[in-house]
Image (cartoon, rainbow, N blue to C red):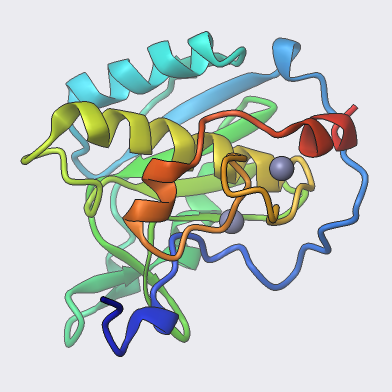
Length: 193
Ligand SMILES: [Zn+2]
Ligand SMILES: [Zn+2]
């Protein structure tokens, strides 16, 4: 059963500014991704992400951590505005820079976001706060990889994809994330060539 507020839930704040038809350039096999911890994400999860991204064909490495941008906290929500997490990432080297934080993120108009990317940019952030690592670490690990690849896909210019198994499919709920794979469908794959 869908809760009344379901339509406001979103796994990705990178919704509006990326037309789904844009062409994408990028050789993922050679793309180097810097993983930047923001706050205190679990070290084991970070190492797992680096490993899983390598398995997905990216070259990923951990970079120096950043502090949580405290001005981004909305005390009444107990959440942080996701946008503010992108700026410090721009100081980091790497063809793409993925921030990983343990705090809960939101974007204007959305109850929360699991990730946010600068469309066709270099930086993106994901949050581990809602992935359920405490209850199901294995599933959380898989969700983390999917969210990471999804946001990296946005930085490559990909929009959301109608194929429910494609990693670029928009997740309204974690169940959608669980249903999709960590891979680009053939159409998305072709677009980034
Ligand atoms: Zn998205
Ligand atoms: Zn797709």
